[in-house]
Structure formats: structure tokens, C-alpha cells
Image: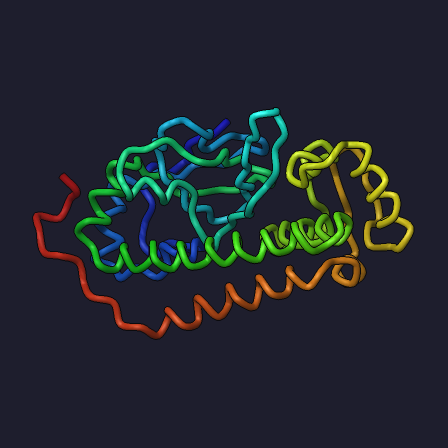
Length: 260
């Protein structure tokens, strides 16, 4: 479930934590501002569903969202995680089409939400918004490519440690509100497999406790158990944002101000 925040409008910069919105010059951000709404992201909320129309674009400021693929036999697997570095619903700029993934809030947080049609209109008018979308697409392609290689080459315990570290990066504390059922859905394995992996990670000290959907980790030991992909993704993400931060961005196309 989503809850609108106490303030309907999102101001600039107003403590903006979302990296994509933070890259926008004031004039370009103002194209979005009248339509942006502050919302709370509740754990397990579904932001978009596979084969359903994308109705909104979400720019998280905190929390973590997993992008899930639903297989015909009912199995699921996560393809990427999105936090304040990205957005959910960006493919809507390509025009009306059903979502290819199901986006599930795994760690509660906050976001700015805009109707997909309004974001599409602003995208068409603003080179800076189009540039922000390009940054997002580059980061997602990187996550998908490294994630595919990781799934093919690395054992499930190392992959689970990687996912836990991705969540740790985005919520910035060592207690993760994740259930074993959620991890089994993300990894595409049985719940019993996750239970056995948790036992191994507890024995090594990488996980301190796992009770009632609260997983307490030891970050350094968990990093030792994870594959190289966690560090590789973090490095590539930093390189993409560092490279684009210094590039000049053209201003918004002059018009009446509001998105029609």
C-alpha cells in the first residue's frame, strides 16, 4: 500500500535524495514539480505489475524496490534492485505499454510519484529529463548484464550475500527487514534452500541473527561471502554518475510552463 505524504507537492531541491531528480536544473525540475506527489512506500507494496499498464513513475528517496520476473510456472526471480539512484516506471516514456516486470517494495521508504502520462510529456520537452532517463537506462543495463552473468556463474550462497549487501547499501543500516520467503522469491530458489544458506551464513558470522523477518548482518563478513558482483556493480554505478555529472545539459524547451 502507498500513502501520500503530508506535503502534496515536492519542492526543489528540498532535501532531494533521488539522484535522477537531483541532476535536473531548476527549470526542468519545475516541469515535473506540479505533478509530483510525496508518497510513503510500504513494505511489500506493488508499484507496478507485469502485463499491467504503467500508470506512475516513482523516484525513490529511500527504501529498496526489487524488479521481479514472473515465470509461467509461477516461479519468480529478481533481476535488479532500485533505490534512490534510480526510478521505477521509466519505460513508460516509450509510450503506452504493459510493464515487463513486477516492482515490489522490499524495504520501506519514501518516493516522489508522477503520472506516467505527465512524465512522458515532460520527457518530450526537456533535454535534461531525457538525459536523466539515459543515465537510468545505462545503470539498469549494467545491473541486468552483471546480474545475468552472476546468476550463470556464481553459487546461490554468494548471490544471496550480494543481494543482502545491495539492500544494506540502500537502507544504510545493518538490520534488514527481509523474510526468507522474500529472499526465496528473489533468488528463484525454494524456501528450504534459503533456510540452509542462512544457517551457513550465521555459522560464519556474516549474519548475526534472523528472527521474525529481521536479518541482522555483519557487513564485512557478508562481503567476504559475496561474489565480486556487488563491488563491481557499485563501482560501475559510481562511474556512470561521475561521468554524467560533469556533462553540460541543455535547458528546457521554452513553453507556457506547465505540462499540457
